[in-house]
Amino acid sequence: MPVSREPLANGKFGLFVHLLDRYKPRVIGVLCNGRRLTNESYSYHDVRAALIRACEGSEETALWLIADAVALAKYGFGYAKPSPAPVAPLVSKGYLIKGETLADHAAKAGIDAKGLFQIFAAYNRNAVRGNDPAFGRGTTAFNRNLADPEHQPNPCVAPLIEGP
Image (cartoon, rainbow, N blue to C red; front, side):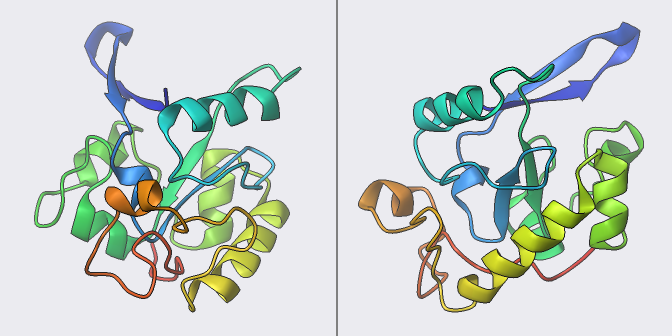
């Protein structure tokens, strides 16, 4: 299932299972090439299966979950709690990556900037209307169940625009 690793003392890691934050608006998942691979609001079984297929033959099976500042403050993200909890300690530990710009974020995360720019442009263009034509995010009751019912027209979909 999708998990993130928090660096701990002595080279060990804590694991956080991303069951809820993937469903929220202003959150997308991308591969190192900057492209989305699936509907982030699918069950963790389906996201995992899509990730394994997308990374077949790669050295690493990894998905970068990206949230903008509004999502981070409102919902939290992984070990990061919602505002007013500080996120700086998680940034300095390397658990969260904070880029001042999208290009800065891509460089720090090791994500292809050109691919990420293309995905952000395509996703955001449709997300302002609550649509995700690429993967149909938020079109099923299952997708919407763990999203943000107060966010309309689609509780799963909103553009990522508020940096860093």
